[in-house]
Structure formats: C-alpha cells, structure tokens
Image (cartoon, rainbow, N blue to C red):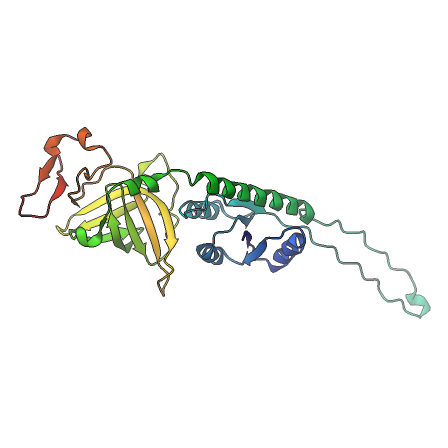
Length: 295
C-alpha cells in the first residue's frame, strides 16, 4: 500500500494539508512532527512520497537523501518541498449595535484580507503527480529488477564471518564501536546501536578527506583505516533495542588478513594485477590466508 510521509511540526499546516488531500488522494497520509520521528517511520516502512518543509536546512535535507540512498528498495521515493499553505480567512465579525443614539455611528469596516500562502488545491495536484512518478518507478523495478550497484559487487566477493577473522579485534565506525558481522575484500557488514550520523552517510565527494572512515583494530595492536561509503542501512527487526545493519564499501584496497578462498585477495584489484612479491603464503600447518605486506 502506498503512503505519504509529511514532516510538519506546525499542526495547523498539517491539518490544512490533510484537508486538501482528503478526497483527492487515496493513499495513506502520515504526519511526523520531527525529523527523528520521520526517520523512525521510514525504518518501519518505506513511503512513496516525503513532504519536507520548504525551509528545511540543506544539511538536514542532505541527510535524508543520503539515508534513503542506503535503504534497499528506496530509490523510487519522491521528495517534495512543503510550502506554507493558504489558510481560510475567518469571516469578519460585526460589532454589536447599541440602541443609544450616540452609539449608532457605523463603524468603518476594515478592508478584506487577502489570503496568503500556496493554494492547497494546486499543491494537491503536485502531490498526485509525484505519487504517480513513484509508482511508475516501482513498477519498472518490479519488471526489470533493481539497478546494479556496489552492494551487488560486494556480494560477488567471498565473505567471512567474524569468527573466521579473529585477528580483527575491534571495529570503530562513525566514532563508535560497532560489531563486525562479516568482511570481504570489498567491504564489511556491521551492526551498530544507532542510526548512522550525517558524516557517515555523506554522499560521494571528490575529496578523499571528506569520506567516511572505518577503523579496524587488529590483534597486533595496529590499526587499519579504510575510507568508503555506506551503501546499505536497515534496522534489525529481531532486536529488542534499536540496532542497524550497515554495509560499508571500501574505496580501495585494504591490507587485510583474509582466509584463503581460491581467488580471494585482500584487494579490489584482480589477483593477476598485483605483484607476486607482495604476497606471502602461510605455512601448511597454519590456517591458510593471504597477507598483503606493506612496501
């Protein structure tokens, strides 16, 4: 079932919007009074259209876009600015006339007040068009499938659960400790106790310094820092406390000790593209893995 998410802290404006949509839109309309409440609703179910107040700060809007980009199957969502809607003008109340002669002078009526704001009827037409666009994208995805992306590339690589890489002792992501679920040559699957912040969901930028970073603390008391991008973020439904599964994709090769698995190497490059002297194979009596040596 399609539905609209309205982020509007002003109850009067929210009521005006619902009155305008009622009878013209058959989809459910849900109003959230804050951004955090809206994100919690998105975690429960992805809407088709999100209406954000026109004066929403650019950083907040960018965060919403980045967060939606990390949710599987959310590429159809349409976002529309929510202007101040025109409110109905209250009728002017005439003053009561007194019977005494000196009170019978007619009071000068104030000029009619022109209603201000955007026409709710016209805005309803915009909402209907955006809903139609979202539904068309959903139909195309149902026919042709989701577009290929980094998440699919990561799935082509062998992945190893945390117990198979015990030399990775801790993982720090976005300034907090995260639980490592599995790791591959292209990225990691993490579990966090909170929704990723804006700096962790920042969209790709030409400057590598602005990229979010993941810190892997190894058993040897050394650290590896990897820049990359959050390509997937979903809430964990089975947990009694809020938790999120986050897929972090590496920008480039990272010197990781990964278990031996045929063609797997700790790099985004193909094995034949790497110099042979960079690799050292463990002894037969030890667990087999490939090691990318510095140098």
